[in-house]
Amino acid sequence: MSEVTVGQAAKVAGVPVEALRELCDARKVPARKGERGHWYLNAEDIPSRDWVLEAVREQYREDVAGAQEAMARFMREVEAVQLDLNEAAEDTTGRGRLGNDLRSFSDRDSPFDRAQFSLMRRLLDVQLTHRRLQATLNTPAADGGQQP
Image (cartoon, rainbow, N blue to C red; front, side):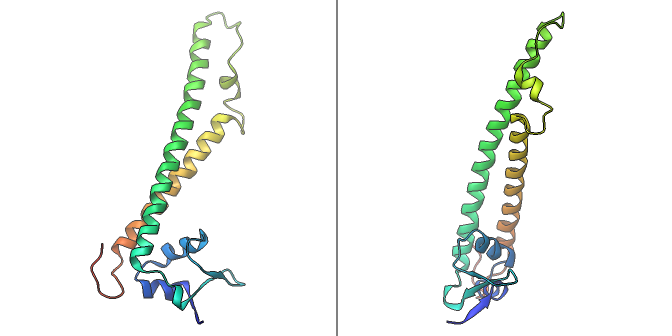
């Protein structure tokens, strides 16, 4: 079996190198990582353009679903802080104790901070996968065939 670089395989498949590299990183394509960190595919295992496109679409759907989950978690944390803030506003004397969510809001590892970080990471995943999907759709097919 002969091996080709991920760049050569991407050219044969008619897809962007980064899209195929990301699929290798995610272990969705059978590939071997060389000593210097480069991916190599068996020439017989080069995926088709349609397969790569569907794999990137599936990753996009997964990323969007993950971002939606992260957004829901973040919104629950915002609501918890809002409830504590409302209680603080009702305490016109200032003698009451602030709620846990409001007190821990500024901690580096608070539930709010973790939820916000997770949301930002998930939104970035959506953006990056969307770019790979757009690049794949806009890359001319290697065989001169129709784009999906």
